[in-house]
Image (cartoon, rainbow, N blue to C red; front, top):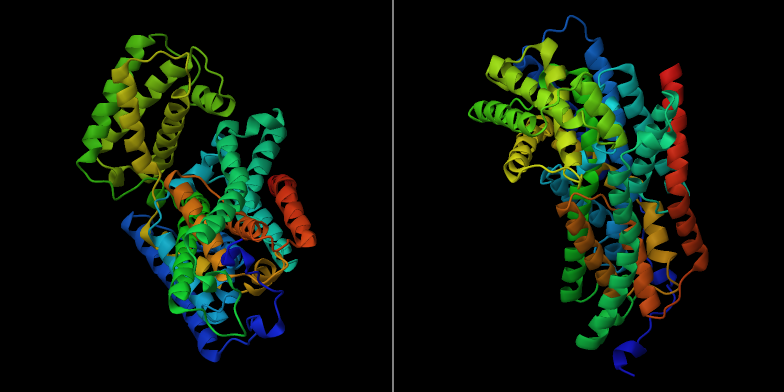
Length: 536
């Protein structure tokens, strides 16, 4: 047996535990308040400028008050997400004494902030595409706002409840469950079967990512720890911290690096989940400013119009039948049910032609009048969703040229409708970063003390963090939401199992219960809230 495998971490002693419950300094509180005020002011100024630049004239402050309330709730979701999920990223550096608790939290909050700023938006719109298409197209109606509020309130309620109990439940699971609940409730309210209210293809894709990520965290963190024991013979790496002294410099640097990576990846992935909902709120309340991307290059507009016309002609040449039902009704039904009928492609051709005519008529996005901008956006969004669904229809025989033009058109339509203003990223980043600085202690104690029976070693912390950083980063590239909570906590459990340190079964049982119950609980919560909001 090697020396490394013989080294076992003892049970944590009071002297080896970090000082978690120290009171925040006055400087920390002032810094928090300063960032909070700065974020609110930054959002308000940019919102006012965007609306003014769009030429909108409002005779009442009521739309701004309603918008402000909706944005505060959406940012509240990101704030809760910050202290609920980001606590996982700092647990290892705190319990290995690599950083003091407050420095670790501020450090993690800063890199969460950067992660949000540099995010692509792919995850945000992947989440949005799970919602019922008719509700997305009705973002400015009562049902649209009921949907957004039901999603946000159910996610916040469940996240706060699990945080209060100290359970590292997944914000991603919660939000996905809330979306499914709204979709099912919306379908039942309109007399359809509950299963017709959700894009199950996208839901299954997201579900696989959420279900497999804890397994990946457990297995790969365990394998990485075992590989380290074989190839790295430094005994210090496999010991637990002594008293409150920091680890050797190179180990400390490794742990801080992995914490930084997890924080950045968390911001880049989880930070996007609220962005999509915020964009729905902005589109619904201020369509003239946010329904379409007003920063699209002017030279792109004629190309989109020409491409739409060419695509329409190609589709009608292959499928000459003309739909007798309004194209929007045909296509909305297709996206909702995934039932390809003979009317779908001709309806897409008609809608594509209408989009080209609208763009050609006005010449640029910023010249589309206020009364037409919402319809233009809805047509573009619907056409893009239909093109995405048609790609998976194996029985549909499109020419290579038609498919190429459809793909190019979808890309242009997405650039017009799926965008996130820089100021939205900034305020989400501030909300997530500030959330990191508040309420992190409960989850940190669970992750750091209650998963394994022995104190976390340097190698265990580094292995779990490195696997979490890589997994979340890869998911971000592919536009898949994953749970930082599940990846990291399962990674720590994997290292404890590989090290034969023992696992605290009561904690694992609670974690498993939270993992199993989060989805059905959030489904029921959001469905109930959606029904209440649409009836009262």
